[in-house]
Image 1 (tube, rainbow, N blue to C red):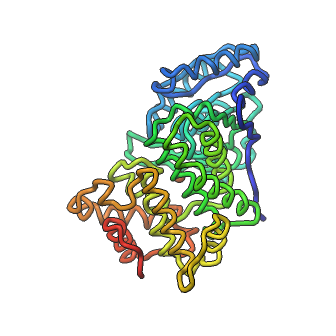
Image 2 (cartoon, rainbow, N blue to C red):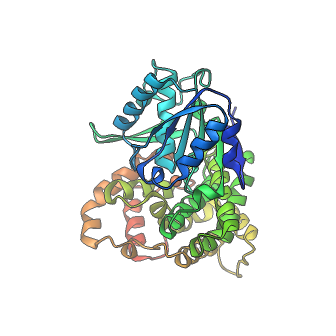
Length: 388
Ligand SMILES: [Fe+2]
């Protein structure tokens, strides 16, 4: 028995005005200080006012949101008693908001205790949640996973439960139009990595394959345009759609080795998530190689790229992804990323342990042992294609 879970998705031009159609008396807007300074929150408030709702804004979500920030938001919600949580931001904001909403509705379940085995959460009776992404990559607007950091214990919390999926994802390209090129490119690589891993991990399935393939095609076609010209609204819209489609795809299958390596690198060197996973993606495709050759060929064919005689589809796809990364100024090796060799060597035991302990590894079509994990990092440092 398997499940496919997704929220209602409102997308395209003017999708934000969907907020004016929500029913309720009050909304708790969760965002961060940067977005709160951009004017988008004023528009959100206007739409909510048209819906007859009053609002309270909580703009204290930081990158890699902490459990402590989530607790602060929950305390404010308990006083304000909103009918809606409206998350406006990137993955950090949306993840924090999803966790706040759970504990606000179910005070008996603490935010850090969310896990896949709790059933009948009964969410949505007291409060619903709408997510408005302002980046195009994480897919957090449609996923039922949350990553928080417990700063007291210095530990990352990966919380997952299908019932915490948002009620509505509002995917309006205008909301993501103010991303600078560097954020557009690295979050776009996150969307690509979700789609490729969702299409090729061990839990891939008939319901997610089509979504992942379409998202891969959209990223290849529109990410370079969105990075080069942030005002190209067609490219912004297609990338916003790609990220959400990839999000629904991968959360209903799973991410794999590139995410395990990316999480590991980010934990040590604080590399932006999308940049890290996107950098490792071609190396992991080469490493999987024959284990997924049919799927690599499907992707390459769908992208309209020829596979030269005698060449493997995995090598062709890895090369195409490195070409895309170069076109949008994303690094293709750890050396290019600026990590000094001695720092990499010093961190290697930790990097290797992190990968081996990462949940994304279990669904990887080929799982590296400890020695292979170290080799993967070393090849990625040099920018060398995988040959083992
Ligand atoms: Fe990701």
